[in-house]
Image 1: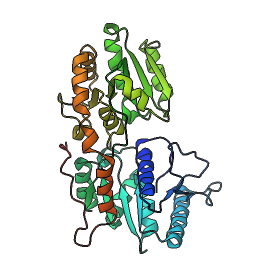
Image 2: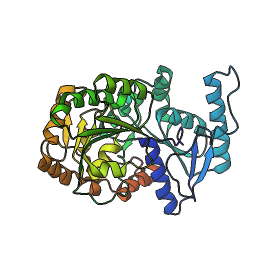
Image 3: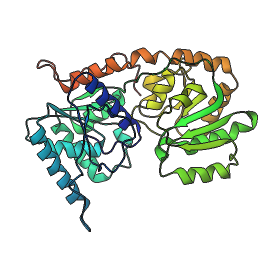
Image 4: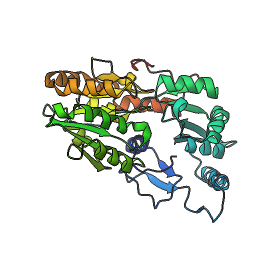
Length: 370
């Protein structure tokens, strides 16, 4: 269960997981709360059954959102009674809460996964935050991506939590050939901090006339960011190329990857860029980057919302190709630590625990939490 399968890190992870399980011979049903008119962004194995919980419950005029959600819960509950799955897995807070409600009292195991740092998810309405504290303890298991997020969930939702980071999908071998391009990938939202990146790049671009900045993604802040780019006189230096089905070719050739987020769940962009042997600079935000990057060893971490520190780190690496290459070689170590079969085994243990071990242990390879 997930809201939709439009582009995004959580959507990509769930699509990849569903494809993995389908290839393993599982019967997989992937359902969204959005209608099937919302086009799936990532390819799915043809053996996956794709359904929508919204198919027969389009809202009527003047119908409250609460009433619409109650009808969605009722529809999913009917589906669960009919399908009788071994387990239901939901991603994203709103989907998680509706799924928990739909499964109450049914003989079905319900597992939900938080995909951001819940302590900083300020965009989530207050009513949903209250429901999260009330209902997460009713799930059979709650999964977090980092130790930091798990600690918050245990304390505030009074529920046991298993920690399962994102899996690294199959990637081409790292390339030694890199272009003088800074690449940033993500939804164009305040959370992702692309405004900070533009301001940092404006401070140093005069000293690096051959370098360009490419920002990949779509979102509600697109027009504001384009105006900021123009105000900073970066028209010929910064390009917004929109949402792209496959960002791997961009990250594989980038001289530098920058992730300036104000907060994260577990940043796929950082993980995949490191797996491709790229030099990566990330804001040391909660949570995720510090689990992947050891400062100065396999990447660079800078303070959150510190434009000056970000500009300084970018200028330092842009001027030193040998250092970028060294960091990239070290970064490629994530290819083994976050291998898909390792992470999917953790999911199997969380979804189908042995009777004597109901909670998945914290993985010992996560480097550190904030």
